[in-house]
Amino acid sequence: MKKIYGADSFRKEIEDFCASMHESNQELKVEIYKNAVIYPYKERHLNGNKIGEGGVFDCNGQPIELSKQKDDEAKVSIDLPKDCNDLKNCQFIDEDAVFLGMVHTHFGHFITQSMSRLWAYVLRYELDLFNKKAVYIGISDSYFVKVFEMLGIKKNNIMRVSVPTKFRSVVIAQEEQLIYGSTFHKSYNETFNYIRVTGGVGIL
Picture 1 (tube, rainbow, N blue to C red):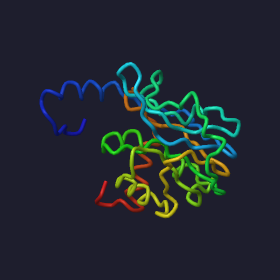
Picture 2: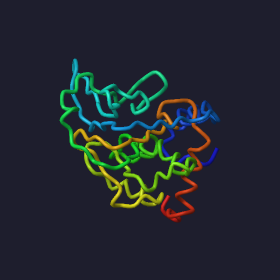
Picture 3: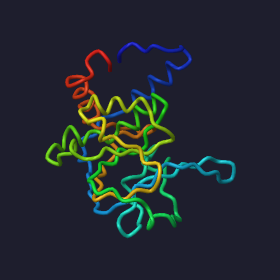
Picture 4: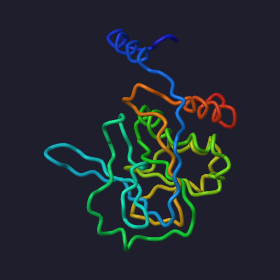
């Protein structure tokens, strides 16, 4: 293990967590939906708990499981709303889009969660994702999206959805890293290496 920079009180916890992690080689999914609607991130409160909602619905108004953000295999941290009366009257953008998921304004969550769908740009180049809209949901615009530009996504193709928006098609890549999971996919490092080589030298 490389040197840990942090309080001694966290050392044992960090060492135990790192020891429990293992690399996964399972095949990651990519799904494509025509006339899908991306629903923006919203927060609601239930029994004193804050619940995050947002994701992608198919052309029939059915929630797409792959678009949900998970903390681990069993726990969904950002779910799709159950009742959406505004899907039929949403705006339409006649372009193909790639759903990047939730972009967090917290750096640690951005690295571990908001970058977890970028592997498809690196490994599924046959889908020509760089010429599609790169669409994300979130509380606000984040300066962290600069990382998307470092990957090679054009700035004018990066878009935060703030109202329900239908696209000609939406590509959804499976999350490769779950923040509280015990596995990480081998492509996780490949994404960082790709950014480092193509545009992030000295930054990441």
